[in-house]
Length: 126
Image (tube, rainbow, N blue to C red; front, side, top):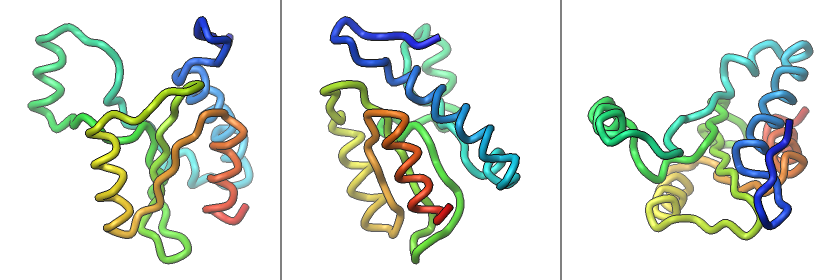
């Protein structure tokens, strides 16, 4: 079930769920995908105690939503940040993006599941 924002755009969570449904389907042909493509649960609102415990456990603001932990095309891996509609990067997300690119990772912002699939297929050459 897709969730839409008041703007009529699907939510970031809905886009990400659709992306991982695609990853699951592709894993029949490429079994490593289920292990090597994963979400990084940094976003969302949490109770202050839970947020503190997550921070103490290593959760960091600005880290993208998904990591593709496969080296390709001279890059060490690929990050995907999902944004809905006209959503913009936070200052911490922008800082992470620049640091990731500087350190030879591919970094993408995706606003639709189709875009996320396209950049993943292009990166993995599938």
